Length: 490
Ligand SMILES: O=CCCCC(=O)O
Image 1 (cartoon, rainbow, N blue to C red):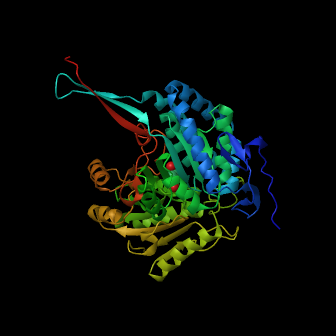
Image 2 (cartoon, protein in one colour):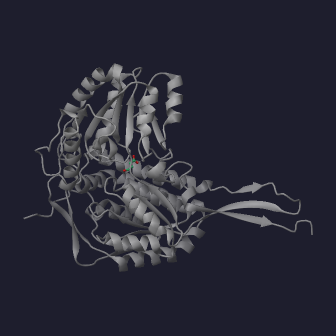
Image 3 (spheres, helix red, strand yellow):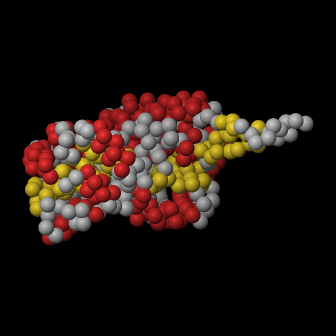
């Protein structure tokens, strides 16, 4: 019999179990169980909302838009700064809640809270810098002026792998621009989203500006969020196949869309690399969040001359990783999100071994629980094997050998995805050639962790469009309006 787990929060009011719509907590029956992937225990039962509640949230956001967009940038920034402060004051509790529902190690979870809060802080400041433009007109009796205005109501669907930061990154940009916001978070991880709503309310963000609807009717709620005429923009982080379906639904009302979709990140180690640094970079890039991140390294491409040295050092480093419950002291790799996710990874590994790959380390379920998979390394992989073609989303490193720079770039680009890529080299000429040759939206050069609020996050090809964070991150939430001022000579 599963029991409700004691969350151990210092502030128990952060554990919310209802959708947050128009500044109110909406209870409905039946409920959805939120479970801890580390042990399968039920953490909470959350009201299961559906189409009606989603429509209510959209109408709340529409009604709140006029007053929110009319606030000065300074007023919005002040409220957002208060929200940021509250998130950071509650970092320990929010991190704990995140680990309980998602599984990642507590230190990583707290890191995610600070990372997510960083977007609230960043966009609170950027709100003050939504500048317009004047353009020289083609005739003397006219002036051309450009202003920027919020697009309107923004709808979002966010994933379970970053249950705080993916909401914060989207909502912060939307609210700063003057938009109102409705999010449907993943049903596996609703608690982090609801805690953010509780803190938004405490910060004084007005009712209807930030709404969270929790429910397992993905299709029905998704249809409202992609087709409702009152929604101007839709933003999604998740897989490429789901993203494609959502884009086509958005086409029915010609919504602005931004998509952060799947990745197949190459991590290239050239023979002139600092191998120890490359090992460190690959370790964090691959094994953070148990490999369940769209920018996680998916393929490690190593030049023949350093293949043995890199493989030996990397294997020693991965073997030393401590796996376990994310709340346990010293855990570096937690569970995956579910036993189904483990089965998917298992199938990819088995298919690749059948095709000729060799297991250097791991290669099986971990005895710690149903959702655990051992940190794994495969050698002798080719770019054609299933493990290299698919987004792994698990703690497996396929090592692929290459001969030269041209080979490496061609192999790295041989995918429909184009989110993040990484490479290690000390040769300045090579650094420029490879950085420019990689068909990716983000490139880590001698660096395995590239995400931060100041940088533009996003992909090319089938990894999506739009950029989140950075000075570019507000663009997707703003419309450009051209004012043609005529009759100046009269
Ligand atoms: O799966 C994608 C989540 C994005 C993680 C990041 O921002 O680094």
